[in-house]
Length: 311
Length: 131
Image (cartoon, rainbow over the protein chains, first blue to last red):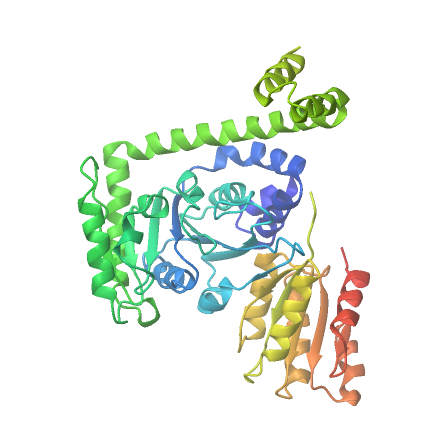
C-alpha cells in the first residue's frame, strides 16, 4: 500500500491517515497490521494513567521533552472519553502539549474511547503498532482519567506510570485492588500541594506490604507544571526499561500480552457467532419462556444452546 | 463501524476569549463529532501540525482579536503547502461583513458571525464535508 510506504519514510500525514483507517474500519485495520507487522515491535511503550485532573497530559509533555533531549522520536496517543449518549467527544489533551506539536520528532494523536471501557480505545493497540512501524522509539499512551478498575493499559504498555495527586482519599484507597496494583512507577504529581508527602507515604506503605514482588516500584514526587522531579522520573523510567531487558521480563510480558490480544480477538469473533445464533434462533426465545415459567433453568439452556452451536 | 466526523477547533492569535470556541466544541460533541480542542494562542503552524496529525475532516478557527485577515488565510496556505486539500476550513468570531468575501476568496469555506446558531453550524459541517 502506498500509504504504508509513505508512513515508513516518516510522512506524518500518511501515518495519521493509517491511524484513522484502523480506527474506522476493521477490515482495513487487519490488512494494514498484517503489512506493517515486520516493521514494528522496536519501540518501548509507556503508559501514563491516573485519575482525571491528575496531570497526565502535563506530565506527558514534560517527559517527552526529556526524551527529545536524548534525540529520541516520540509518539503520543492521548485518549479521552467518548459520550455514551451522542458518540461525540472532546479530545483536549493537546492543550497541555502545545510546544510539542511542531517538533519533527513528535507525533501526537488524540483518540476517543468510542464505547470501549478499560481506559483505552479499541484501536489503541493498532495505533501503537503504526507509530512503532513509523520509527518512533518511545510511544506514550495517555489513558482516559481512570477510577479504580480501568487496568487495560497493562496489556498494552511495557512500563506503566501511575499518576496520583494529594487529597483524593485516605490510606484505604491505596490498599484497594485495581489500579493501585498496576504501576511500575508511582508518581505523586502536584507535590507542591499540601498533603503530597502523606500521599507518597501511603503509597510507600502500601508497596512495602507486598511481600512477593520481584521488583518494588519506586514512588517519585514531581510537580509537572513546574518541571520539578522530571529528571528523576525519566531516570526511573530508564531503570525500569533496563530491568525489563536484563531480567527477561520484557519478552515474558509481551508474550503474555500477545496471548491476551489473540484470545480477545477470538472472543470477539465467537461473540459474533453467538449473537447471530441467539438472534436468529427462535428456539432460544421459547427457552426463555420456559425459564420464566420455572420449567427450566439458565444453565441447562446454556448447555443446550452450546451444543446446537457446536454442531 | 461508525466513523465520527473529526473536527479541530483552534484559537489562532493572541486573544484569550475562548468561550465561543468551547461552546462550539461542546455543541459538536453533542452532535456526535470528535472534537480536538487545542487551546488558546495557537500559531498557524501549530494548527496545521495538529490538523495533519489528527487527520481531521474539519478545521474550525475562532478569532476575536481582529487578526482574522492575516491568520485565517495563513492556515489555508500552510495546509495547501502540506498537500492537505480535503479538509473543510471554517472560521468564526467577530468578523466584519466586508472582510468575509476576501476570506472566502482566500480559501475559507464559510465564516460564522455572532447570531449563528450551533444547529446551523452542525448542519453546515455535515453537508459540506470534503471527504
